[in-house]
Length: 234
Image (cartoon, rainbow, N blue to C red; front, top):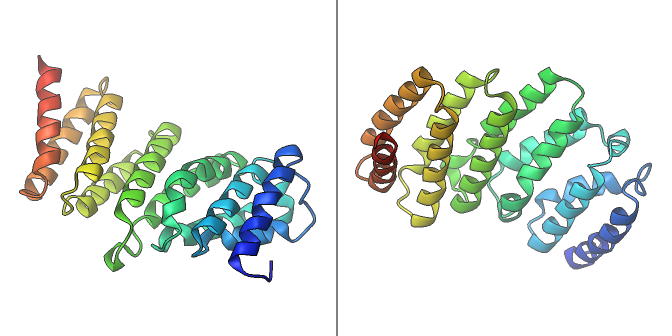
């Protein structure tokens, strides 16, 4: 672990073989701490291999006997999401399963809700300093849906505020790839509200106002949602 990135990447690649066979084989060693340390490595291969090891090892509750979930794992992921560096190329595919594993291993419902709200809030730290837009938008969409499915009632106001905060960040970017992700998330939320007429109407009203404020940049999103609404009303 004191050698260069290529050596460490190869070591984590080998470690995956052992973890697949016996996830608790690293318990009582320093390896769990090394895994957490390299999750934000600037070397993409090392970062990816470390994440794959984390996803294998952290599925086993005994992993948290070595690195405490509340004192080590949660703070590490808060830092990961706050920092808008190259590790976001790996977070795009690794953040959602990590959020899910941590959620499942937290000891009570209050901590689970706090975890969801905290990780979503962290998405907006450092966005004014530049970010990898596509991984950021895709990751937010996935984690937001996960949080909604787990705690839509308990976190309803927070989730609404967070979504429109997300919209304010992404609307200035007129990009086809990101627009499709944004539109998919809007339609997904609207479908979840289909049996709650008051909430659905309130969401559409606030969404229309937000998109109108973002014109002309929001034209593509606005048109896609308008076409969808027209189809729903037929």
